[in-house]
Amino acid sequence: MRHLHLSFVLAFEFHLPQTAAMAGPLIVNTWPFTAATHAAYLSLTSSPTSDPISAVVAGCSKAEELQCDFTVGWGGSPDSNGETTLDALVMRGSDQNMGAVAGLRGVKDATRVARDVMELTKHSLLAGELATEFAIKQGYKNESLTSEYSRSLHDEWVKKGCVPNFWEDGRGCYGSVVEGRAVRNQFNEHNHDTIGQIALQSDGRMAIGMSSNGAKHKIAGRIGDAPIPGAGGYVDDEVGACVATGDGDVMMRHCPAFLGVELMRTGMTPQKAADEAVKRIAKKSTDFSGAIVCVSKDGEHAAAAHGFQNFSYSVQNGGKGEEDVRVIKIQPLTIQTAEQSEQKVLASY
Image (cartoon, rainbow, N blue to C red; front, side):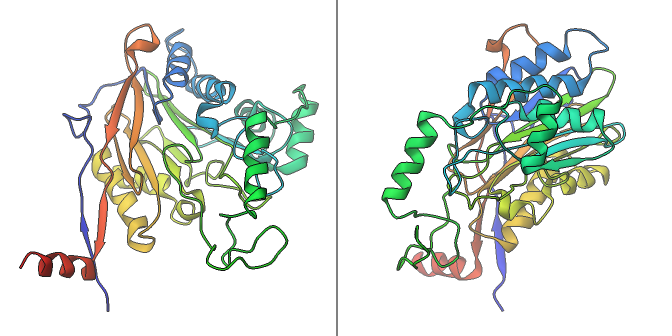
């Protein structure tokens, strides 16, 4: 039986492994999307009674508007048909009430529509064309989500025979198997799926927001982890919140955001909870790329990542401008098998 030996290099801002506890108002989100961080912070600090849900909607909507890395919002990550579809989630920490949309077509304001699902209906998740129909009935504009960038990305992919792709056998555009091309997309800092954002108000109220346009060249109809509670994000005012980003197909199988919150409930620090949540996935899927950011109810925050060359997250808990947003860089965790460890030992002789 092969055993896994895990070795870790933990989170550094390049001088601190994790923050000291600091209560809100606080905004934390995956990736260096500082404009989104600041937009959420402005909303959260507009009044001591400002709603954390409004803050994450403002932040995620800013990321959608700016098409951050073309992995959030319209005009990026075309599917196998060349279409961009959107996933989004909002969740309130006091009672876990939530709203989500998955595979939203033809409407750019995915996070706002997710909020409407939460506040206007008794449902939690709407999907596909009928989610679009719901949005249009609420007054949202029906428009193309295709951009010149997404069109050219899809055209180039088709010219290459529709590879790499997400078929196990690597089949090409017309169903034929392309020898040696059963290659998954490589998730990295420019193809990572998601913004996940956490808001903590000074009175302890929390919320999370998620927004994504999914994986590039995904099979049409695929839904990632972003709109799935417990997978993309989870929050409980009594404990804290966690949000995830990366290979959503793998990560949703492990519900890392829910796990991170529950580990903090047992008394783990955000750093230990994030490390353990990522480690659990890495034990089963050693080649996955992803990250999780955790924030305690006291405002302590930390992150862990695996498979990315680089990962960073953004924080604002003071100041008045976007220049006051801090970007914290994380050294990803490493994992090696017993076989790799033995080879290292032999090589040292």
